[in-house]
Length: 68
Image (cartoon, rainbow, N blue to C red; front, side, top):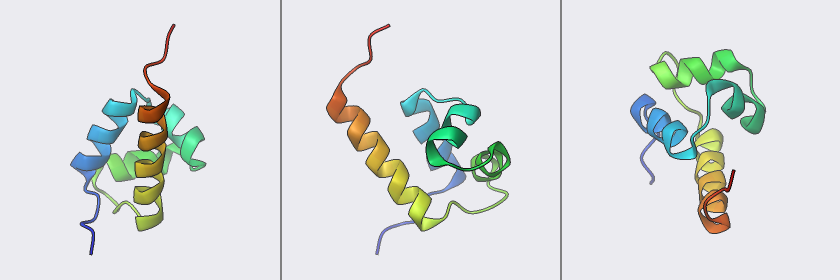
């Protein structure tokens, strides 16, 4: 069984993705209040969001660095 994503894990993921709360909300299709709750640990990150975060990071890693 996989360990649940903590608030610290979620914050680290946001930083690795270089995403603001607003960007994360848009990409995960949730409102910014949910992002804030997950980031601060007020609410647990749902398993389906954890999996989506993993998949999005994997895709970003495969795509390589973004060029400005």
